[in-house]
Length: 385
Image (cartoon, rainbow, N blue to C red; front, side, top):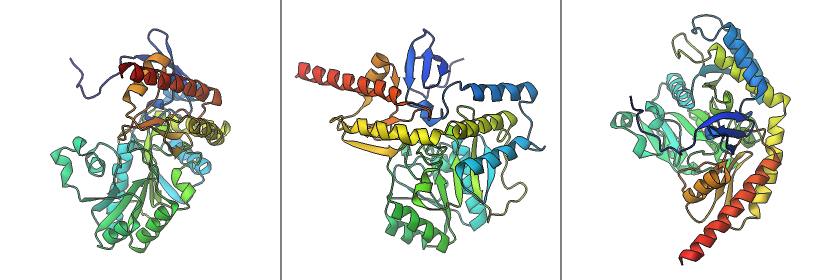
């Protein structure tokens, strides 16, 4: 049986990982500065993480949400402590798309309305509701186009205010720092004013922290820098360090009802063990502090490279923008220098999303490699001309 061919694949087969490195089937070592779309938060095969999953699966790997699972409460309590956000309730699911679907559903239940506002370059997922509020028409099937969704320019508060005042909006959803869309972030005043307008008009404000959350920006959540309190916060990628887990934090003013939300795999015993381990490691190893320190070094080094025209993002959610498309640069970094990086819808932007326990010496390797690639590409260009 053939696999359904929807992924363009690099001819590399990683088989093991260790910290910031992965190793392929031939034993070649690769520096992982992408973490599988920002999923690897505490490093590949972290011993505490491995032990937590091994210990749990030896006892009980899964049972449904029809029974008590104290691990869910332990995860919720640790999340509150490590993140610093309070007076929310936690609903667990299995992915970022599922988290955002449930966020939209809660908002619609709570407000009794059905229109959602999203922004240019947004990426919120591929399932039916959230792909409708993702700014990529090529991944929307006709089935996805029936949702009431309005796209606005990011950072345009007047347009947002005008739409909300029409009275039919259930939710405004945004990535504080856009991931796939190119690492753009609006001004603090935009987020603060948006929060005020939503509150005045009884519209739910949803912060999509699927990629930017879990310490990736140096704060636990990216929105915390801007001094706002979203009604719902969605999370996933870094939450399980590779184990499928997602969730939403819901303001305690929203009343839950039996049957309102549900999931088969969300909050299962193994997922909770993985999630608890991630929070423990983030706290014990002070990974948010490390993120801020290493990011400062990386940003300072990036400024020294004249071919990098703009630096975007915060913490270890970094975008390096060139004045040329970076596909060939990425490929050479990967195959000649054994460094994984990421792309975005902005074809001139190189995305860096490494594990949060990365060190300065890892970035030294990267910057040496990128200088070599740029020098080599310049030589090729001169030779061809």
